[in-house]
Length: 220
Image (cartoon, rainbow, N blue to C red):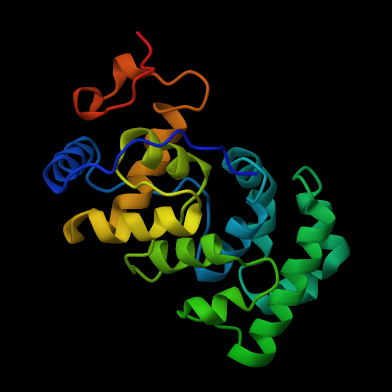
């Protein structure tokens, strides 16, 4: 379940631009925290990260990705071998089934190559809109927005991207954040939501956009 956002009004263009200018100055090249070696391992890592932490996924995939970096190698490993590697991750049995099915489709229909189309990615078992957007953004350098609970919360608290669900927030990002920041926008927001604009106790004292944020329940 997504965290229910406490919404404020959508911020104006100039305020949003200043917010992302500050994010860019603080971290010009923000990176995703899931470890991967290529487009395929990125697809697997993001699919495994649903309802799991990046840290937990990285621990589980370290040995896996040392052996497996293509769909065919995953099929050769087999579902039992994959399950053994990811058994510390939540919902690992279903995720293992999805990874194997997706790997078979990639081999059969795409010659083992991860497609750069959202529709094609979303057709893979276990790959939803968020996973597809992460892969398109991180690997194929497309300005897609992978909205998770951190972005949903941050967008609505601050007024940067207001919406009732992930699709509305995704569209708000595309509509209101200046084009020059679109490529890295979701990474800046995820990292800020994860480490500063936290769900229960936001660290407002350390927030570099505190003076621009209309959230009323700021912490000291």
